Image (cartoon, rainbow, N blue to C red):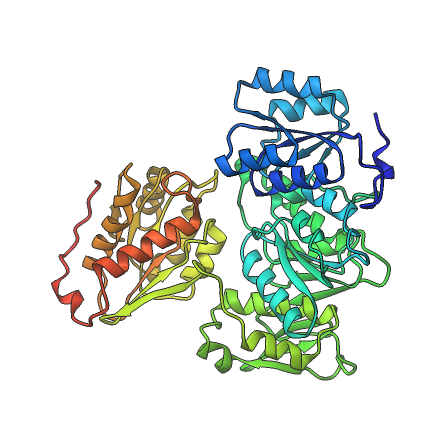
Length: 508
């Protein structure tokens, strides 16, 4: 078997390496494409794949084993005698193919480790800024990359955000910075030591709450995966002052000598912190007189005018400010970047405001932490909740926000657990269930019910606290269907609400 420690550059001898790639989604295909370009012998094993990716896998010269039983896949993998296996994010830890690799002593890499080793393809490697957390990763990554671009750097938001890192490191013109959003699945498989361990310029774990416990097996294992983001950080390990677990991660991390711990929070900042003073977002971290003076970044009023002043969004802005200041961005460039930033679709997106009722799509709130942040910004609210809970208990969420709820509309596969949480912790809240296997009718019925409940001053909020794949193809599909149903049912006239039928609790 080859000594993989020798493979530290695009120019290393990757040819003749036997590699198996598990999965043919975006990251799996990117890994296969990269490795075939490097002249490795690539076998792709996947349960299913789109017709386009199947065709492209054949075009690039990879061998594809699609479908089949677990025994068939094991036989195919063993016959390939792999020197290395690249695992797509989300493969269960106890998957038979992974267990075979462990028994056979075959190294298992994520696409992130592969990309780190290959990052010099276009010359001087880009600096990496690593971002994780239960909630807010994508918004913070996008904002960080946008600020860097506004400052004149070549920067891209990549990784779990949708653009595979392996595609970015092969981009012909190269980058100055790659802002890498990392999921707990990717972090779990990443080494903290050795030639494959990433060493980001700056890193952050934005927050930590229960999520993907069914995959990781425990809260401790999930937190341990997230903590990997700080390993080998060079300039700034950024943490959330309101989440003690993130500070503990930084304190326990093995970082490069000289790396600083930088805190952010919605309270007053101390030296080496970002925070809020009166109605100002301020910094006391990277300017010369930080021990005595806080430098103004933005006013809360400025951010309110651009719908960026919800507490969770302020936290994202402060984190991105810390990361980009660590990268050398000036205060003026930071302000210019935030002033021109637009929040991604399906993240607290106002769909319609009519008849005094606001309809908000936060379909990206796929866990209880994200849903809690979204609920905290509105009152009173008709809450659209449900989907796949991923082993997480929603009872604390219901209990925490019961006082601001006018009603709840429950969708998805795990409706029973959500209804039980309401019966136990908020029996006074009217609860409606939409039980439909016809996905095209889920959101029209949701909107019909909510339209019959909401009155002037209310917010109808889609913040499901759950994954979407039980009834929709993605959180984006869920949000788009919600928005379409709102426009179809509610329209834009101020007197639409007068004709809405009155809803009564029911289960369809």
